[in-house]
Image 1 (spheres, helix red, strand yellow):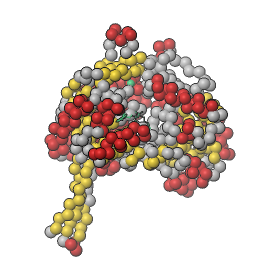
Image 2: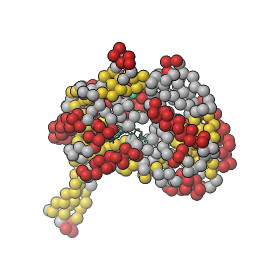
Image 3: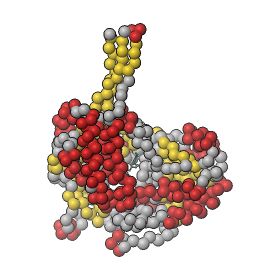
Image 4: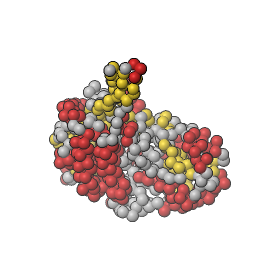
Length: 490
Ligand code: NAD
Ligand code: MN
């Protein structure tokens, strides 16, 4: 802790277990990314706290799972309404805690957290199961679906409440109870939501939130014998550890991991739409979205034209303090992460690549009190090899690479030439080409002539190192329930 610590008052978070706020004996410092100062203390929970949360969730399970879908639906709608009623407070808190712009938090993320609850409150009313007749055997077969039990939910720091509620909502809608852990770097909005659970009618123990680090609190959840299901969103490396730690228990796993998402831009693309959308897809949320574009392949005959327009737009993408409603980009999550992102830019330079704008090229103006904030300008790299770590590894910051290609076949092969397979974007007016390319890309999702448009009914998730499992209306229902086939002889 800094020397002056005793003179300051910090926001103090507490765990939420069995419907009560419970103090923790250990705490972690949490930083304001826009100033680099500690402003919040987060419980540093371990096995003891996780055990208490799992017990509370187990106790709450029989009554919660016995409620009708309509009863649970009404509670979820109420919770959504309560979050919405406090939308501005949540948005301010998310922006301060994470470094994202107040505009993103206010107009996109907190509204989406609200919608996650409304959405699953609705879908839970509409599921049916299968039936197969076998008259020749005198039998009818059908399936039933039941909640799995205590769900362990672990979420990352980039879209804190948005991604946490994307897990909590389907988990409890289907009748499970949960033990959830947000990132230790972005715990505030989850803690704020706990204050609304009782008023919404969520019974004690149905939603338990334990704060802390991955190695302590996270692993205690993952390796708990009474948590049969883990839904995890985060990095590929952590997912590997989770698979190892959960392996002895044969848990149900959903893993939403990193990406190295290509944008493929053919020479017939509508650049008036493509350029601004690709700037957005590269730099939204400081480039800290798993779906952000970080490899831009442009067909050779429009390469120079695209690059010029792209760099010009990237330079206009305004970086500033997160609370300023006119900025496009705020601060990165942490000092360590900022250093990591910068190290990729240096690596590219050392390899002989060209940095066209951003880090090391342009200068950034922020107020004095924000000089220690974790800011980085949108950075565009070119003349870089596909084999460079900058073209292979997830940077997860406002850094994107632009390279030329000649043929359709070539670009498909190069786009697929990474370990990740989350999403891709294809720009062309030729519907035949769009279809062929989309079919051949090894990714879970492909956007054509647009980016980030999502219907929550449809599956979301990646292939290869980007994960296993899908989430969405039907997929989340299936993941958070256990199916059983019953045969009746009549
Ligand atoms: P991370 O893997 O470091 O952490 C994610 C969560 O896991 C945090 O809550 C962390 O505390 C916890 N954790 C860490 N180690 C753990 C362990 N050993 N056992 C259990 N839990 C552990 O990821 P991050 O840095 O917070 O988030 C960024 C990553 O998340 C990026 O790779 C990004 O692509 C990915 N992401 C993926 C999606 C998606 O839907 N595919 C969405 C957002 C972010
Ligand atoms: Mn924070």
